[in-house]
Image (cartoon, rainbow, N blue to C red; front, side, top):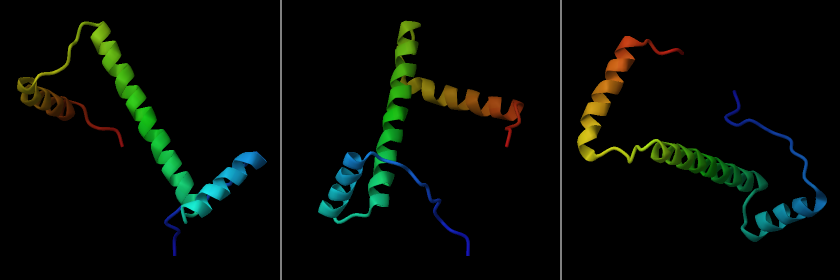
Length: 89
């Protein structure tokens, strides 16, 4: 049977390792659960940062955002681009 998870080996300084162990014990969680949550939080922060940077770049270029009436047109344009350009898989 194939594993549904991927194992990683990481190294931590002793003081950080003690903190991880203490938090896992205090919260009745596994260390794996703590690291999964930490990674999800990190990933969400990166996505927020990328979106904020994109928004700031758009504002510097004078783009103040799309309006509700733009949505249908943008969807149509995006779908048309997809028809013209085959997706790479």
